[in-house]
Structures are given as structure tokens and as C-alpha cells.
Length: 483
Image 1 (tube, rainbow, N blue to C red):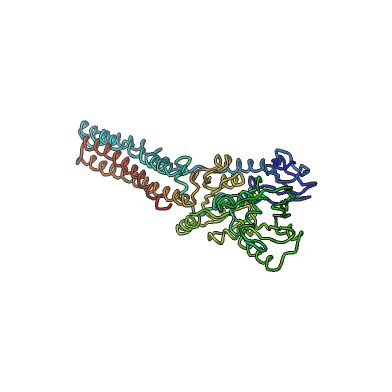
Image 2: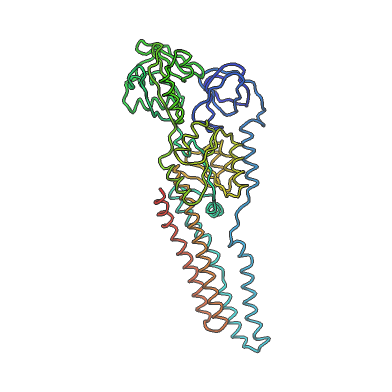
């Protein structure tokens, strides 16, 4: 496999060492260094060095194929939600017809009542019992809510999803690209033997032209600091370790602390500083100049601005929150501690699906929020799957809903909108059935006649529609408060 090639099959590395971008499969934001006998997955991308790989699985059995299979199985096992109004409507209309017929026929036949009077009352009952208001009570509210949500970038695949999401008791989030921004950023620049500004300049010179995520972070920082990046000559990438070159007449190396330690001894203070960064979940690269330690740069994929507030809103609502990620334990724990969320790290797609299944077996109604192919099985296995903005096609197709703007707080907004919608539907049903029940009784006892029955039927339909339309404004206001 040449540098930059996408690995087509699962296999073992026979020769070579390189950084492998496993983000499409595991969600790991930083490429993983792998050498001989290491396992590689189909769909991942080779980094800067050539590799020879022995294929260990056919195309039908590789990691991507297993992910697709898990998605299909999970979708097949998902039962659709049935709304109360759908069950009730099967019996309501026939019941009204039977009652109207009995009212029109029984009194004249058995008690000598006037046929014209009781047929008139039977017709009034048919009008009162017309299910217009009842039938429109649910779809009107759902349509209004779906429209209100869409204006805020909250897309739901139908009314069943909108109803189900309000019953959620646990929320499982992916880390990279969901709770975090999805791209590393430079957090610390330390000058051990050179000024910090020079450390950044030399590192940026070495990384110029690289597509590595960490390289992009360094180049972006150099651009934002208006650093004058010098020219580099004799640049050479060292597979899985770093890069060397000549900058301003100095031999410079920039790479992992382990590789830097192989070239020169790090002092206890330098080792301690690097360890402290690692304990914070940061990725550290060390800069050497002319064989001496010049400095270090620490990078981290930072949480989204609203992530902590969004998770707190869910927790305050009594919803359990967990983070499922393929990232390394140290980084995941650091992000989890910062956001106050339970952490499950170093998970493959099937592991994420397993954790979701465990939560469901514990009695939780689970929502899964993710943005990549690695999240697809868990999205399908959850009671409701939500894809974040910028999600992979597989995630969008598998998910039941999508948060287009990528705000964690919008997940809570979606749940709040669902609960408000269901409350509105219950109000509509109460209005429709309540008015009909009152006028049914008054018509049978002769208190009201045909025209009041017509007005009651029309009035109930108008009231239900107006009540449902309130969601267009209220849903938007609720979402704004959450944001």
C-alpha cells in the first residue's frame, strides 16, 4: 500500500510502519502508528510510509461488511411505534354508527317514540360523532412540530420518531465530531531550548504540505499567529515517527516523544511536562533542532462550545448520558471528565452496538447520537438514532433523525419538542372527544338539536387545528432557550 492509499481489506502488516487513519471505522481522530503484525481494517487510510499487508478476510467478511450487516439486523429488529389514535380509530367510527342507529330505531320500536324525532336525533349523533376533529388531532400537531423543528435544523423521519424520542431515558454520544469539533487544535506550545514562536515556526515548516490532522492544526495555528514559516529542504517522513529536514541551516526533527527520545535524551522536567499533557488527553509532538530538544507542541480535539450545557440539560431532565468512542482511553477520560459524562472508550462499531444493547436490557429507552460509519450499527440498534451535522451517508441513512447544525443542545431541544408535541396531541384528543361527549348526551336528551351538533363538530375541528398550530411558535421559542 502506498502512502495515502485506502486499505481495501482487513489484514496484517507484513512489512513497514506507518500512521493509519482509522477515523472511518473507529472514530479515532488521530492516526494510529502501526507496524509489523498489527491489524488493519478495510476502509482505513495509509499514512506516510509504504506497507505490505496480508489479507485476512474476504470482502464479504471485512470490517465494513460487518458494519453494514449489523445495521441491517438492527433495523429489522426495530418495532414501529403505534400511536393511541391509530388504535382507537379502528373502533370509534363503527361505534358511532351503531349508537346512532340504535338511537334512531330502538325508541320508536320498543317505546312508541316518534320516528321523525328519533331519526332526527340519530342524524345529529352521526354529525357529532364525525371523526374529523379526532382524525386531525394527531397529524396536525405532528406536522406543526416537524415544521418547527425543520426551521431549527432538527429533522425527524416521521411522526413515530417524533413521538418515541420523548420517551428517552438514556443518551449515548459519539465523541469525535459529536461532542467535540472533530479536528485537533494546538493547545500548548512549550519552548525547552528555543522561544515558543520559533518552535511553532520550525514545526510549521516541517509540516508544510502534509495532510496529517495534526499537521493541519499546526499550520492553522501558525497562520492565526501570523508566523513567518521558513523554507524547508531535504524533508523526509519517517514512518509512524515524525519528519526531518533542514530549516535555516539547522537539522530539525518533529515527531512523537518516543521517537524524539530515541534521538536524544529528554530531561526529567521535559518528560514530566509531556506526561502532564498526556494526562490531559493531549497529543504531544516534540521538536529537535541540531540534536537538542527545542520544544514541544500539544494538541487536542476540543469539545463543542455547547457540549457541557447540552449534556447538563439532559442530565437535569433525568436522562442518563454516556460517551461511546473509539478514541484512546486517556483522551476519552479527559474529555469525559471535562464534560461530566460516563465514558466507554476504545470501542469498535460492534462494541458500541453492544453497549447500546446493554442499556436497553437495563430498562433504558436509548437514543444514540453519532456522525460516522462507525456509529451506524449503534444508531440502528438504539430506540432512536440521531445523526449530527456533517454525518457520513451511512449514518444519515441509518438514523431516525438529524441535527443539521451539530449543536449538542439541539438533542435536548428535539426531546423537549417531542414532549410538547405529545402534550398537544393529548389536549387535541381531549378537546375532540370532550365536545363530542357533551353534545352526544345533550342531543339524546333533547337539549340540543342538529344545528348545534354541526357547530360542535366544526368548532372542535377548528379548535384542534388552532391548538396544533401553536407548536409552530412555541417549538421555535423552546429551541431558542435550549440553544
